[in-house]
Length: 387
Image (tube, rainbow, N blue to C red):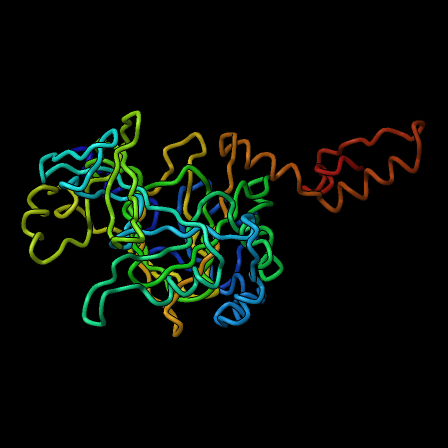
């Protein structure tokens, strides 16, 4: 089939014959980044990209984080923590007999699924850190009653965690220069090994910097959209009761639907045969690209630049010795097509010969003789317009 041929061709075009996400040993120049990755719709991992950040040495220290983010009773000093029963927020969940519709319980089919968002609590940072680092459970041999994840995606690093801002760059300079804008949002993520993000795509250019722990990504190019089995699911919200220490799901009012990927790339042993039969295009097609982003590295993922560039990605993580994974991501919102970004960047570069020539013209005044081009001029002379 043509679409299956396209899957293979895009892989070779995007990542070459190696089939691996390219890794750079050092940050690219702006023009290299724009030319080789942004304009080619190509993800990459950049090593040694944030080695100068104080965060790399400081954020593994609980005392430092708590002291920096020490809070009072003021609500604007609290942080947002997302709670789920299994670590999967913004993911599909079964609608069971505990779901609530318009305030009353209902019992949809056990096969029904919804798009479930996390329950959000606002609390002092020391309490949040404790919940994240030590998942609450009934006993040591029982799974946790909930999984806590600090992941408010609303520019939270520059609001809730602004006290930590001196430990990181306000933006990624070579990316900002290439894309011609500053980040629309900067977010902080603090989680543990139980947190997992289902397949999705973002509408921003995403630079994801890992500070502690390791992030494991599965990546699929946008041409693989059919393999995601995207369907519309009713939106619901987890509600957590402090009294019963249990979750319920409540459908949004008014009822709305969210298009979401149906595939779980890591089905349980019990469900694997059934899942593979249900989603053959995913499990029988080309394998997703895999990459691990380590402390000090940045993953570049593409967003929506008025082009079909949004890569699907699924994320798991491995903690550091403190049991946590901390990352900062920068979302760049470009409002124009990539060809304009490329032209605007090139136009912003000051050619040294042209610059010196323009200074000379300004100094000579308006009566200066006009420069004349010679047919045998060198390239620099032609660019500068000098004889």
